[in-house]
Image (cartoon, rainbow, N blue to C red; front, side):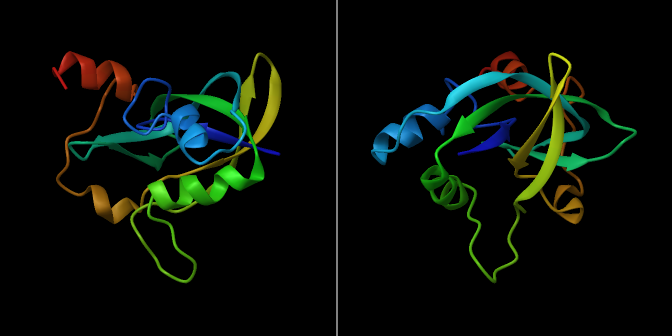
Length: 135
């Protein structure tokens, strides 16, 4: 088991809902540990967001799940992360705070140069942003 911080389309109710992804692949359901934020900048790619870590950025909202190790390969496929290939999303490890407790998580930020010219999501909340834009 490991933990993952999801901030975009992998959040519950979104197009790549992490629970639905597990169910489609006959993997045990992820367990929601809580909500957390990471400092950074969130950008609108149209159908999905991209997160760039930045200590001077806003608090980007996301959810932390405990997941079966088998689900990592599914998440990597959704985020188009392949061994030996440098893509848009880069799996990384980060520690977040959930109700005062540090939790180490996998997450998928994007490469900084990929967001050039894209609109920034000032609220740091993809779901709120998507809904307010009628998507």
